[in-house]
Image (cartoon, rainbow, N blue to C red; front, side, top):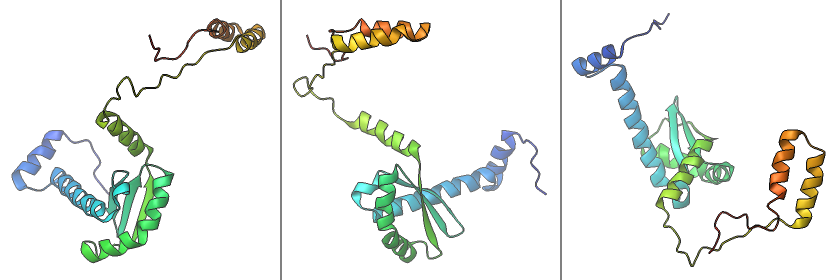
Length: 173
């Protein structure tokens, strides 16, 4: 049976520094192996797929890949046989299968990377979209507010009061 009692962090650091092995050393070696495998997989993938796919794990001959969404999952499935044979030939002869999973966090990360790496458009290229609430829509909202609970009634009346005003966030001067 395993000993699952809490251990201090000092025991991990002391064991790793004295012997060059231990739990932290094992974790580091595993992370480096997965990083190397991730680089190899990226080299074999088409350019369009590289930024939307990463190696999640490799265990017992099964390579687990994560992708950003269902559309990338389908594209990876088309590449799966070629990727499997190339990885077997180059670095993983014991590879039995590839499992592809969707990780929404990866999509969010890619979206954040796109935001930080895009150049802000100039004022001339920004098309201001104006959203104006018509008076007819305002009347419908007021009628709906009369039949609604008090809290919702306040919100609907406030929304109806915006009729005829420009409600877009990028207002042009």
